[in-house]
Image (cartoon, rainbow, N blue to C red; front, side, top):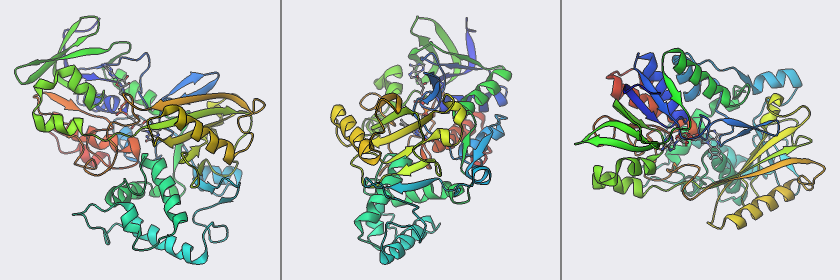
Length: 451
Ligand SMILES: Cc1cc2nc3c(=O)[nH]c(=O)nc-3n(C[C@H](O)[C@H](O)[C@H](O)COP(=O)(O)OP(=O)(O)OC[C@H]3O[C@@H](n4cnc5c(N)ncnc54)[C@H](O)[C@@H]3O)c2cc1C
C-alpha cells in the first residue's frame, strides 16, 4: 500500500500536519500523511451529524489575511469567505462580530456609547484599557514580570464589570482569563484580530472544513499521499536520528524526515522518553493545558439575527456562543440554526461543569433547550488526555517559549498548536509550520509567508 521510503512522513492530519504537507509538496518532496482517525482535520473540521456540519473543535478562522489564510494562499489552497461587511450590506446588520448578553436578557454592543452596560466613567476606563491593549507599544507592561492582563488593567480600572467582560473576550480567544494570559500575548491576539473592527472578519463558506479540503486538494494534486485509519505506533530512531515509523498493523515505513502533529505528549510515547534530554522532557511534562467544554446545539430558531457571537460576562462557565449559521445557513438543514457554546473548565468534575454550563445557557435564553426548539445537543469534552490544547498560551508558554519545531533528535520535527507561535488559537499554527519548513528546506522565506 505504501512505498518503502518517503522524503517526509507526517504523523497526524490536523491543521498543522496538512499545512506542513502542503508546504513540502510545493518543494517537490514525496510526502505521506498518516492519520489515525477515519477523517482528516483533527480538531479543525466539521463532520456530518443529523444534516448539520458539526465542528470537531474550532469555530472559525479570522478570515482573509489571517496567518492561516496567508499560508493557504501561498500554497495555492484557495478559500472563499463571507465577511461581516458583506452581511451588513446584504442584510443591514451592524457589521459587528459580537454583542454582550447578560442573564437578565439585556444586550449591549461593547463599543457603543448609546447602548453600553458601563457608567460614563467605566466607559472612559474601558476605552483607555482597550486603547492600551491594542496599541503596538508595550507601555505599562513589565516584561521582566510578564504582567497579566489583570495586573495591567489595574492601571486604568477596578471595575468588576470591565474585568468580567475581558475575562469573556479572552476566554473566547484562548480559553484563558485576565489573570492567566500574559498582556504581551493578548496584545498580539488583539492585533491579529484587527480585521474584526473593520468588518473583514470572515467565515469560510462551507465551514472550516473547506480549509482542510483545500489543503487536501493541494497535497494530492502535487503527489502527496494522505492515509486515514492508519495510526502510527512507533517512531523508529537509529542512534540519535529518526529514520521511519511503524504502524499499528506492524508495517514499517522509512523516511528522511518524521514530522509529528499528534501533540507533544504523544511524541514522547511514540519515540520513547529515553530518546530526549531531560530539559525537553521537563518542558513537555510541565505544559499547562486548556480544558474546555463545547456544547453544540441544533435549534429551530436563531438566538441572534444581528451578530454571530454572544459574549457572556456574567456566566459562571460560558465565555461565549458562536452561531456559524449566521454566516452560512447551508451548514444546517433548511430553516435550522446551529450554536456552539464555549466554556473553559474550572474544575475536573465534568458533570458539574456540564451542569453549570447548561444552567448558564438556560439563564441566558430561557426555554432554549425545550424539545420544541431543540433538534440536538452534543456535549464535547476536551479534558484530561484529550485537552483543547496541551499547551495554553499562558506564562512561559507563549511565542518562542513554545516548543521549537526542530526537536532534539535528528530529522524529527513537531508542528501544531503546541509549537512556537502567538495569535488567535489555531491561527498561531502556521507560524510553527513555517519555521519547520524553513528548517527542513533550508530557506528563510516561509516565516514571512504567514505574516
Ligand atoms: C472547543 C474548541 C474550540 C476551538 N475554537 C477555535 C476557533 O474558533 N478558532 C481557532 O482558530 N481555533 C480554535 N480551536 C483550536 C483549534 O481547534 C486547534 O488549535 C487546532 O485544531 C489544533 O490543530 P493541530 O494540528 O495542532 O492538532 P489536532 O487537530 O489535534 O490534530 C492532530 C491529529 O493527529 C492525529 N493523531 C493522533 N495520534 C496519532 C497517531 N498515533 N497516528 C496518526 N495520527 C494521529 C489525530 O487523530 C488528529 O487528527 C478550538 C479548539 C477547541 C477544542
